[in-house]
Length: 228
Image 1: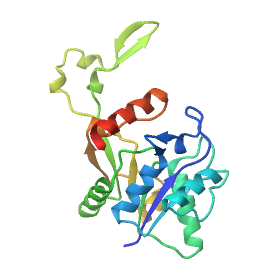
Image 2: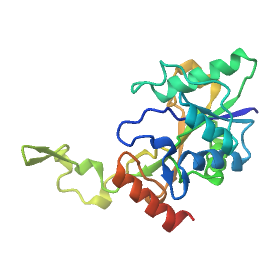
Image 3: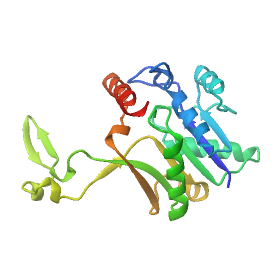
């Protein structure tokens, strides 16, 4: 089996400028993703897909490869993760490099490590999933979510208004860290999620969306408390 790791890291970032190489506890945050991939020993190649020369230089210094720069079409605000992966896989195909499995690790995912990548890969192979990604449980039942309209609240699902939290089915969301996929169904269905996608479940202590400065501080706090 030939495995490729793709770390998508474009230069443009609106909410946190230069987010993908911003200092996170002493080093560029993308370093954590690169080192996790390299340390896992799972990959024939670890590459960073970027349109930015500074990001490319940092990636190369950390041991990743940048065989080509990302196109304009996949560097805008609306390009999907799938489109980035497809572009990279097709570029490798042009030079005769074919892969059986691909793993996309986001550049702002300091909680990823080699053990999680291995667990996810082994789970995907053993269960014969097309793809797999980590999820985390919602902290409160989504069945009792509230709608707010001009300061007036109402239930999205009134039928659960009086239900006990412990009686409601647990729900999960994408942890936003990495995705494993078998290349053939990925390209055939043009999606990371198929009707045969699996998951590993992470705790809230090892997951943090990083979309603003408050998120960034929370991520650093969690990392110092639970990951070092």
